[in-house]
Image 1 (tube, rainbow, N blue to C red):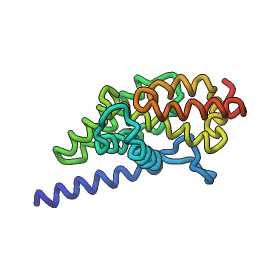
Image 2 (cartoon, rainbow, N blue to C red):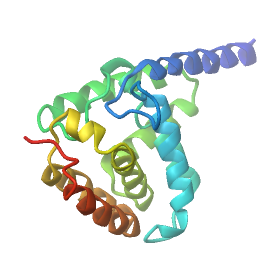
Image 3 (cartoon, rainbow, N blue to C red):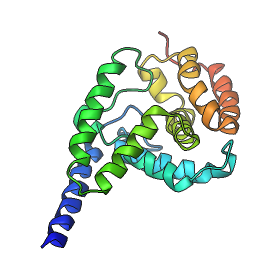
Image 4 (cartoon, one colour):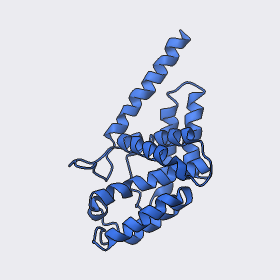
Length: 199
């Protein structure tokens, strides 16, 4: 009976995660008129990190990075998404996300419940090489989509060139300098094309 009970907890957790598909973000997928959801974002950044592994500053456990990226936005099931360029309310938001992941991971049996919480906290603290690399991928994807979509989200939300560089530059440079070198040059190119918002 324990096996059946444990299996049901895992199924319940996975079905709860389905709600992440309904959390709308601010970027549009390429070629589509709708906005992406947080589940799509998590999948895409996990693949970006996997693709960039050789560019990490030090040896990393890429499986741990991918696991972090797959769990890092789960709290948005309860809190919704906040654009990365928001400037206020981060402390309250992080408290709400912690409560959310505590609830959601609590659906799982041990030891997986603790494993996922440790991954989530490691990402939040951004102190390990794996967490810094994960942050680089997380910060890069919205910029890459904006570069491919003529600054769609930057223009729609009034995000200036300066705010983009200040917000995403340090974590990307810290986690994957080669990625920031690429992005910094591309962001400067499109600044001259007027792809940023006016604050």
